[in-house]
Image 1 (cartoon, rainbow, N blue to C red):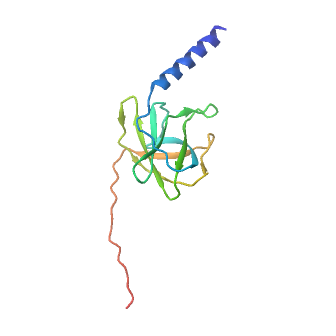
Image 2: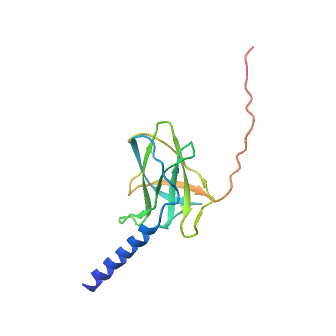
Length: 151
């Protein structure tokens, strides 16, 4: 009986701590149809297991369209985000990460973006979609393209 009470107290205290943590970004949903994305966060090839890393979803107009903290998946032990994204067809979504322990947005380059598709389901708890980020600065080299014209 004591073990059950201790377990319940620990669970309740974890819930209280999480309830006090407010999202860093203000989410402004758009559209009336949703897309579900169950994903894990990987930075420089390392899957993250920090419940205080908030994931923000940003549309191509730069507005935050959703924000989530991860939850641990009991069957796999991974920390996954379940994003419910409301959007408009044709929008492309990118992601940002805020570390509530350090109280700062992480300077990361997203290697993954997703195209909004109404009613789509991307990833599942047992097989989540992977959002890759790198902490390295990426320089994109552009080369002029020669266009051949016929005379």
